[in-house]
Image (cartoon, rainbow, N blue to C red; front, side, top):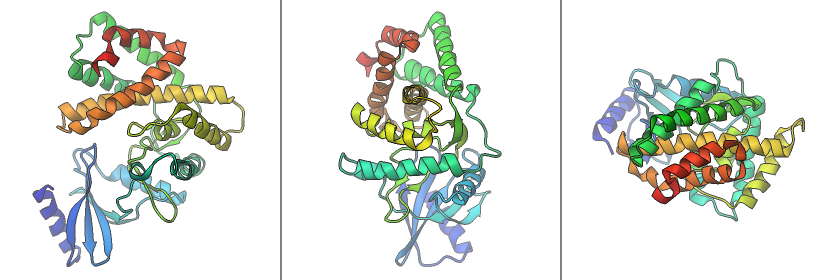
Length: 323
């Protein structure tokens, strides 16, 4: 636990007239943010430490209001210091979906989570939200090339292969841009969903929300980088979600194709981020999640001939053998 941060939080809380409290690390984050649990007697709250130069709090505040107004269970905000990057929020506890998910619990937990996605898509105000446009998608996919292929696997990408990857990523983005859009949380997975007795789940880490494809959050949930399910289970849950969100002006097969290609883009980004976390941020624990995440990519490429070029170039790089 960073003593300087704890001391700064302690002084901040004392100036706000908080007394007789203890502070402990609440969770670790893949970003620059960190979280601390402040306990006073039987009550606890969370302090989010979000360095203003790296992760300003303004987006979190704005999206919190949008989600709260739509009756999505997000933390209540008690105190804010934009200059210091501190925010005092309600405590959802320490039990994430990932902690308790198994084949017995998943149907109930995922039903709750899918209800939230439906409510976000139907009820959240989308004004002043950025769109998940081609530029953002291509920047994210470039992380896969630059941090995973180049830095992590030490693949010497030729100019021809570099151009080919760019063309492939552009073609994928063009397909994704055809998908109907809605509010998108953007990181709706088992580590950001908190198990609660009431109004389950508690939703975290939504500050990067955008307007994007209707299949983005459901693929984040069902093709989670941190836990994997059989294809039959995924298909069953996806069909349930499809029935909830569509007016049947597109087929399930089309919806599933959107689901798969949205996941393809997301998983390329995630692998790039996992590699960057190791080499830029000295957070190596996410490397173990790359084989599972690349497995999703591999399955989609084997089933969708539209992206045979991506499959061919990944075979040239022998990625599966190097994982």
